[in-house]
View (tube, rainbow, N blue to C red):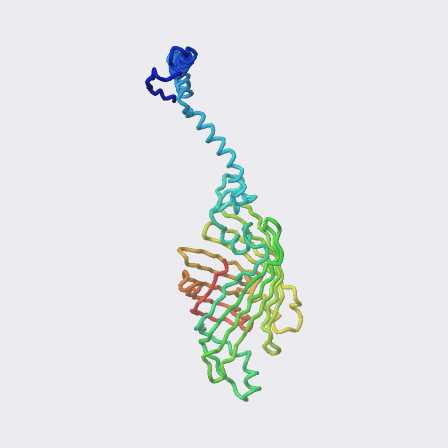
Length: 388
């Protein structure tokens, strides 16, 4: 904006004297320029406003006024915003978690139907988490496998002392009694040695050790009544199929050796090929494990008839509710009518990862030494994890 200032012409100034007509004309020209500038701008603005007022369309007239005022139209601002969002969209898409091949991040969950619309899961399912099918999980990892627990007191209503009497007689010359209450603990872990890029395939090695300890039996120096060792090698696969409201997310095939590491006459062992078929729905999972004995069951070993009592497979149901974990396992041989059932309950975490753990069984094969011995047991203690 040009500011006009009033000034007084001093006739005594030589520049304005009559003897200097060039000065008078120069002064008049300067005044004319100073006055004409803002008057011309105002006139141009008046003409432009008049032109905008003469426009008939509301939107066109508003756009004309916006141009004169320097204000950006709303539509243009919106277009800039859309363009900005379009530029940011590829970045957001690249930062999003990978999507599974069967709908959602980890496939269909909560009973999604095959071929139907699916919803991305907020976290891996029970089987996905247990077997590392989550694409974000570590490719090579060591994880807990079967429940790791310590039962301070494990009671049996029919302790099996028969296999040890020959040993007791040879050592002390007389039979010894075993306590009906003992401690029991289990250590179990697995290691994934290889996994495909999408983690749907994997090769696992596992080891489980279960010990029965006569810790309260001071009369015979608190021996370990039995310890079972079971190394395994497994190929795991995630089918990712859905049917009847369930998701089939586990198919394992592997080899297992189980023995108690003893010599005759209390040696027990067998070798098996085991498959694991797991389906799930929400907080419920069902795992079927058929097996085939591959060692020579007709040989003169210590347990040639183990399949009469342990059968040819087991099935386990898992359920989680408000941090509690429940499992129910059944196995047996329909031809002989012999088998066993196991029920477990694990509370939410109490201190760190530690939980209260209760386990009960009824039937044959609670341990390798008891494969052909029927008993009912119940134990209480603490655990670090459940199977799923």
